[in-house]
Image (cartoon, rainbow over all chains, first blue to last red; front, top):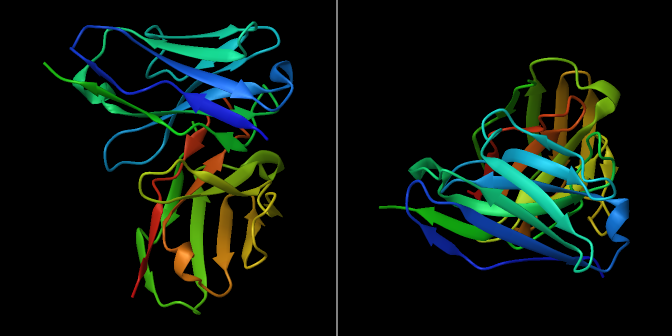
Length: 120
Length: 109
């Protein structure tokens, strides 16, 4: 079955960087895109960006453009999200989610979420 | 960017009742590229509906989606206890960026 398993929670100081990983299994890795969606405490969902796994093409929201990098590791079918220059308002649960059409599609499978806390 | 506005913010109903949730877009959602998700506390969202009206795999038929253009609706015909959760709409027609509504909390009356 399709599985997206994320790395564990992180605690970071303002200005630091964080990497969250999403290990996938149960489907053809290159046939889907992986998106990153975050949810601040008690808030709604915010799309951050995605990667087309087959060609590495990435798209980002304007809010995180310049601070977010998304990469793929074919050997481990894992997608990594790196967020730099962390601020307190980056505190959130980060989800990876699969979509089929790299131009935009619904998210049919989600990771379990990774809590990133940013605090001095 | 397309702004999605969900209403009501909170809906208080009893098991067995019918729930109607609304999602209005600031501009036309082309191809009806609109999805609905359910999220329970401490869990990831779960896909319910895609393409405005198509149920995802394994979703009970008491869930249905309708609408087009700028106005979309999620209907739960007879509420079960496990349906009380937060529901989000998501447009993927004008991507990037994808955008979500702010959510509707469905609570037990």
